[in-house]
Amino acid sequence: MSDLFAARSQMAISLAFHILFAIAGMAMPVLMSLAEGRYLRTGEPEALELAKRWAKGTAILFAVGAVSGTVLSFELGLLWPEFMRHAGPLVGMPFSLEGFAFFLEAIFLGLYLYGWDKLPAKVHLATGWGVAACGLLSAVFVTAVNAWMNEPAGFTLVDGQFTEIRPWEAMFNGAFFSQALHMALAAYAAVAVAALGIHGWALRRNPNHALHRTAFRLALALAVVAVPAQIVSGDLSAKHVAAHQPTKLAAAESLFVTQKRAPLAIGGLPDEEAMELRAAVEIPGGLSFLAFADFDAEVQGLDQTPRELWPPVAVVHVAFQIMVGCGFAMLGLVGFGGLMWWRARKQPERAPWRSRLFLSLSVLAGPLGLVAIEAGWVVTEVGRQPWIIQGVMKTADAVTPMPQLSVPLIAFSLLYAVLGVVVLVLLRNHVMASTAPAPGSTKPKPEPEPGSKAVAS
Image (tube, rainbow, N blue to C red; front, top):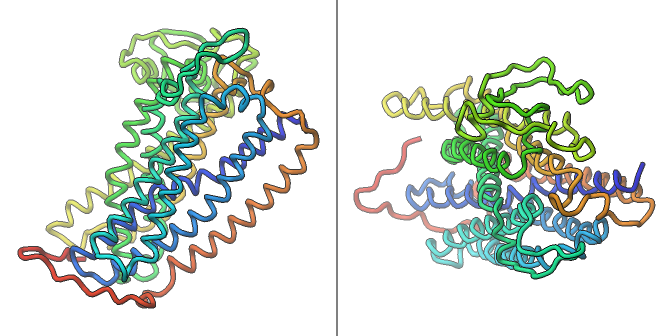
């Protein structure tokens, strides 16, 4: 096993593990705050119990995410010292701001967890939204670093050295907006659909379970908003990649030859030696339209890039197809659920949480958002290869000279596997437990405001 392969594998495993906790840190506080807000509006005890359960789940995920994030920060310096030596002055500011956001998130989470009977109701709810806001900011600042790697800015390269450092320009680089938006919406969509799957499974076993029904409704409400917005943001990201990283787009679509009216490929397996995509369904002009809003636009193929600078085309193409496929499957699910919910205004028995078919579909779709995020990061990172900083520094030039990297690779992989099992067990115990009132819950049931109506389940 080469040192470069071991270093890349270890970083990939660490990122794949950490990203699941990062997105939970963004989206779970939104769900728990929505649940508490519902309780304050309606006085439903199951909404209060749900908020407390989701808060405990958020705390578990936050703790493990803090550990895996710390490991990643060490790995950046230990595995990629040349990258940090050159890029440190440019990416130091977003990393520092991410640290501030992380600590604020921890403070707000502590206030939320221990302030149930000590803070006024609206102040307590505000701390929950504070957790959500800081989790979002933390992810956005980290995404700014990755966006800079994809589209470096804020410096002048002189004899291989980064000079005239402009940190604000580096952080708000050209890829920042589209990539940060796409990542944030992906987190909300993925976690909402995962929650649909978990509570849909519980509702199949017990259709009249009030807590899981409330959870299902809140998760579906978030998914109905986040998933379509995520599809739109994906289109914006694809257009930006087409303009600024054409090789990555060509690899994702396995477009080997530059052409006008380029087809959009669905499925298929690329043959790099023959420079063709086999067994794909192609939509004529589809890629040209999606990339440049013009069916006759010319799209750059891999033939315009030297062969030694190609990313692993098969890996990028398959990952891209998985990401897009999962995204549109989620869109179909929430579209169906939203339509059922709208129709249920006059026919409550047709509500999606009362349909065994929709509950079954929700269970099947539960993992899709998480799979799409993992596949999307494969497209982002592997699609940039062989560059660690696009067009500036190759990954092979940034790796550490430290030998025997296979040892920490195996050790960390085993550690992540054990942590993953522990987290799953803890979450199952907290989320899927009985609906008995939480110990110490003494918050009085709020009086409904004049003219308000509790939402009927």
